[in-house]
Image (cartoon, rainbow, N blue to C red; front, side, top):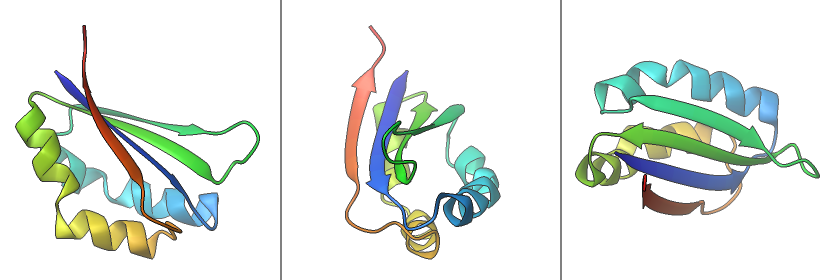
Amino acid sequence: MTTLFVRHEVSDYAAWRKIYDAFSPVQKANGVTAQAVYRAVDNPNDITVTHEFATLEAAQSFIKLDELKTAMRTGGVLDTPTVWFTNKA
């Protein structure tokens, strides 16, 4: 199992969350098996999202989706997200 971590700041968490929740069908159609959203304690617009996949290849394909880039832009992501992949040990 591979977990994709994405951290970014958004302009408005509530507006971003609506776009994120509406994106769920695309997540599932592209191999996301579980997900979670975390907000920084000192900045509620500093978001870290995790998505779990069966394989690293599925996670890498997901992060390259044009639909994902559009959703992030529409949701108010302010700058380039920090992205990393992990395998459960």
